[in-house]
Image (cartoon, rainbow, N blue to C red; front, side, top):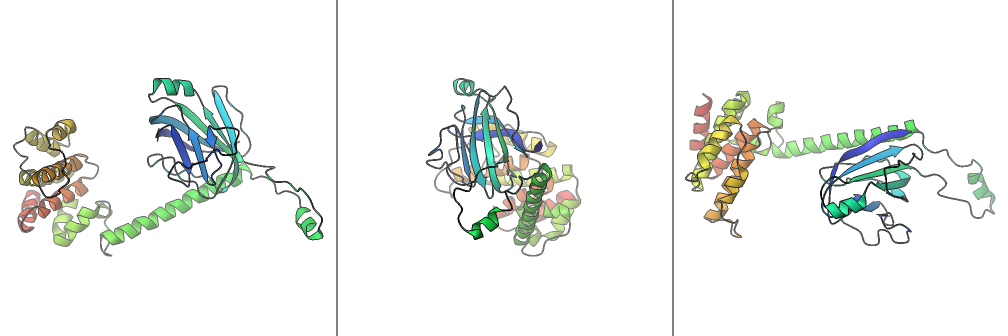
Length: 336
């Protein structure tokens, strides 16, 4: 009777709490009035689960069933609560959204070995959360009017079937995808000031591409047509200007880092960060400029979108130049 696996992923827990639902904070009195203290459901729309691990990653699986599922022998600590949701959020930013349809559910929270999680304090803990529609959660205590009898006489509606539950999950995911698509279009319109390009390469290149487009659309088009290696060469050239402006080109890591940038190779992040002064409170001194310049280098090294990286590096160099033209013309020469 399994309907959907809503999540099966590592999740980061803080201070032994695993909150799930419409609240981003740990609510007080989450288990008030309950017999169990392991999974609190007293606050509407929120489940507050405890983990053995204090802080770190645990493996969490969330399942939706059409009826009560069997309980596996591997789970040492198990509790159940009654839970009502209208719109369920995620466990954390990396785990994403949990698509549980609105309704009233039995929620079963299972832990494999909380003692080990508490004693060892390392990743590896396993937790299971199972939902199925709750039935028999209401009752008629007293009836005296014909009007009430009219509404009672049809009897209880049957519980949702597996197909009905699966359909509701699909509807949630479709609505969320549509909402995200609308938000993406709104963000693009704002980023490109209403003139969103049709070219998907430009649309995916981000805010810096839009900013560079307003200065030199031909340069952005040339970068879009160039290959990854050529774009990395432009990126490294622009980053070198940024590092030189921050007086970092004398650092022993500067040359090798730029060479790695051209080749798309990883950088020694620790070595770079270890030579920088602490980030000061004042944003307009050399220490701040050096930290920000290092950020430009490290951002460019990620290499997930070389067009976006090149546009970002060129714009960062433009910001540090008295006039944009020397940077723009230099970048154009590298693409000739």
